[in-house]
Figure 1: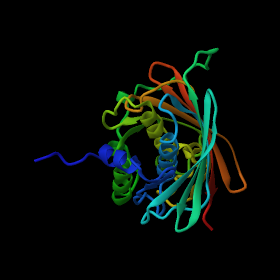
Figure 2: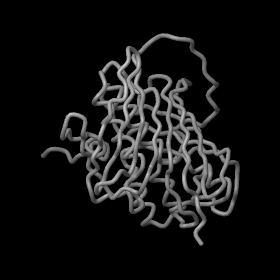
Figure 3: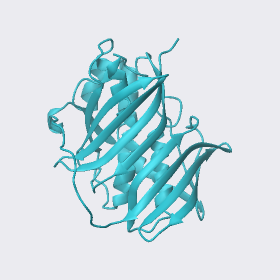
Length: 289
């Protein structure tokens, strides 16, 4: 009998959009941990749509996105791509995600041909080896009710994501430095398509970036019900090649929260110390009344 598809296979199928017109694509959706479409899914699918209208020798170097309204996990999402610019070195695309006749998300992405240039980077921060850290299956049941832990493990089953320190829901009521580190990689090998690795990193980047906001205030997040939150906007810059099926360090911090919003910023490093990605995200972070 053929093997049952893995969680990674299911995720890759979710990201494999159907082309329904020249620059129009349709993606399926699935339930997230909360009753809306996971933001990382929409961002990753939109980047897939943009990438399929760009020459294969041009890869994303940046994206900027806004989450407009919550997505309906029970309905497909249509992605309309606008070919903004095709230059000699750079290609720009704008993507609007539509459900039930209205935009729920839009993304601008810029792609570039490979070229040589000046090269420097910051030093990689210290972090424990990923193999020395507990897996999600080991960590989550220690801190959360079994039903919630099981749902979170299932939602993230395609990714091996390991916290360097206790996650927010494990230290409720104990404010600490607004900084969080996680190691991640896909739970299985990927093809050598470089765009796929960028798309998978985009998907994962929305999972934990606002954790540092919660840590500053001793809040546990949706899992314990002491905050209500959602992503508002998301920006990424892709600096150097990487593989999403090899360990990447996601070093995250929050410089500010105010007005019902929290800001997270981060850098993603390859295990051998190359700065691969920079990320900034703002989200709604409200204390329930």
